[in-house]
Length: 128
Image 1 (tube, rainbow, N blue to C red):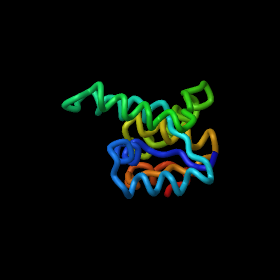
Image 2: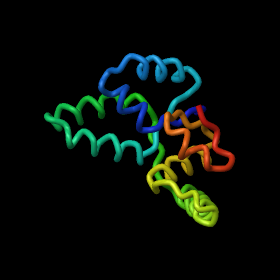
Image 3: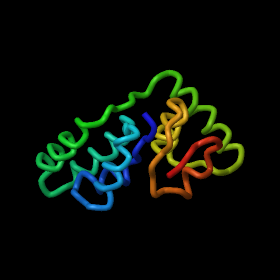
Image 4: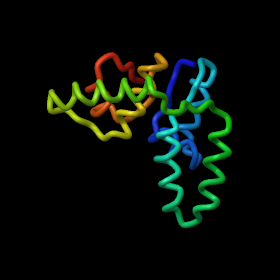
């Protein structure tokens, strides 16, 4: 694996937005995975859709084509140390974002996200 795709791109790809689909398909050659945290974020949005069952079915169909990283003890520790560092610096970001970043760091993946302002605060995290 080379890339971890953040929820913002997954949402767009799931609903068929062409730029997101093209990006994911281009990166798929190098290896693309997602975090179980992104599964939670995208699923929450699907539950708010006018037809939640349909939105969830579309997401799960799309999701089935990628490996999903679960939260492990190593990722939890990476989350904790990163959160402590950001808290000391007064630069905290949402916990869900920190868990996604910790997953990318633990598995040595480049995070594909539009949320550069939050994720750029995390030392050693590669972004695209």
